[in-house]
Amino acid sequence: MKTGPVHPVDEMLPAGMLFAFGLQHALVMYAGTVAVPLVFAAAMSLSADVATTPVVTINWLPSAQTMA
Image 1 (cartoon, helix red, strand yellow):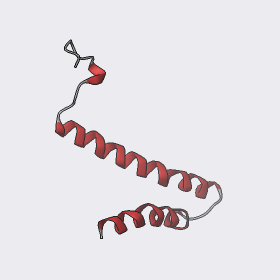
Image 2 (cartoon, rainbow, N blue to C red):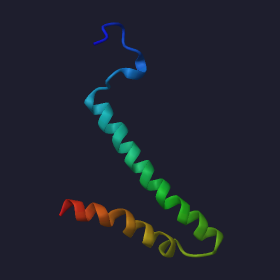
Image 3 (tube, helix red, strand yellow):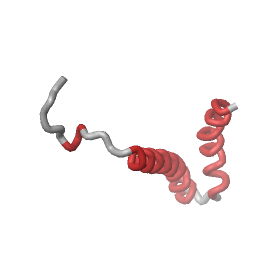
Image 4 (tube, rainbow, N blue to C red):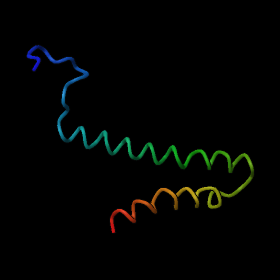
């Protein structure tokens, strides 16, 4: 095992920061998935409901099945 100074990239963050960064990552992934259909729907003059319904169903259905 290496016993020298640890490079900042290899440091282990505290649990609170790990949780906060993980939550931020999950929210950004979901927002990125929803943003693309909204942009295209606006370009095609569709309503936001029509654009995001399939995305929300596809994203949350596997999660609901895993939790059951």
